[in-house]
Amino acid sequence: MSLKHGLLGLLDDESMTGYDLMKVFNHSLSFFWSAQTSQIYRDLTNLEKNGLLTSNIEKQSGKPDKKLYTITEAGRNEFHQWLNEYNFTKPGNTRDGMLMNIFFGAKGSKKKLIEGLNQVIEISKREMAQQSRINKLIDEYAQLDDYSAKGKIYWEITALKKEIFTKANIDWATRAISILNGEDK
Amino acid sequence: MSLKHGLLGLLDDESMTGYDLMKVFNHSLSFFWSAQTSQIYRDLTNLEKNGLLTSNIEKQSGKPDKKLYTITEAGRNEFHQWLNEYNFTKPGNTRDGMLMNIFFGAKGSKKKLIEGLNQVIEISKREMAQQSRINKLIDEYAQLDDYSAKGKIYWEITALKKEIFTKANIDWATRAISILNGEDK
DNA sequence: GAATTCATGTAACTTGTTACATGATTTA
DNA sequence: TAAATCATGTAACAAGTTACATGAATTC
Image (cartoon, rainbow over all chains, first blue to last red; front, side):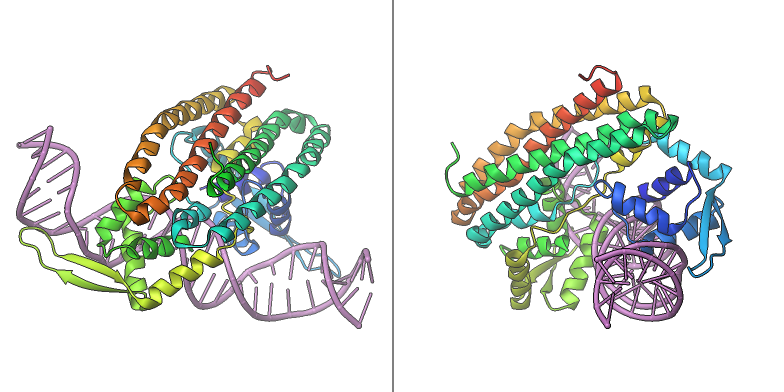
């Protein structure tokens, strides 16, 4: 499972609190992985229980105490095993609620469906507009240190997938609308 | 949630057993929704408990008894509400284990990653080759009756998404490999 | 004065996965 | 004679969602 390995991977670079990790997930990684705080805190607790992390509490004045998590040797081993033995061939998440809905389209309203697809296009175009900002961020981040410089191409590849798939989504929704309007071919 | 609504939608046309429904999911709908038998049987039990389905048992000689599920009026209402009020704007499943892995690529083996991406390309190309067969099936199915004829364009749209996204996957993996090989621009 | 940020979670629930169990019939 | 198909599930677990709770500090 990937959330736990994501947490380990981030903690491999520096110790962080659950709150820090939540911010990384919800700001930087959100386009390929989302996670609620409740899940992150629970998984951190379990990872510590299993000896993959340790924690120690830092007192702060005025603010709540911080619980800093640090990866253990066992945690690094687990992470690297996942990293190197990841199976690219097994089919991923095949669950698309929108397609489930469209599959039954003949039982519903064509007008509403076209509206929905137009919303999809709008949202996707807004996402496309963000893309150059993301690439700029990656460039900036890559100048921080040596590891980040190495990471750059990998982050570019993840960002590229988002870009290509967002574009594909626009193409699909556009063609879907013209099929529904009987304009296709 | 979509599995339950998928079950209701299928049962809207004809009464079926859990086994029948499982086959539909694992043969026809598997490219946008997968489901284990254990989950299907559990959900059917819950749907019946909530009055959205009823069941009656048909004795068979030699074979195990059949438990035929039939949709109720409440079930049809629930289904149609989901069908018409589906929210196209809320972001779907943003969980891509492969991207999680690649995000940490600098910590791993570039050679293995390229191998993995080549496997992705291979699998996707095999899927592309299946596409014309799927479209033929849709054509055939559309000639069965009036409802199926109406359904045709909706099924085409779902199949089209698979086609476009599989192609996008090949594009992405190909470009990712050339980025990793330092051949990109 | 209101909203956001910082920082921690707990509880209850739903959804999805893995492994197991039964047993006859048909097909290769 | 071995494997696949028909047909039913149960049990235990892992992962994800929703709602709630606390309380000071900072920013608008």
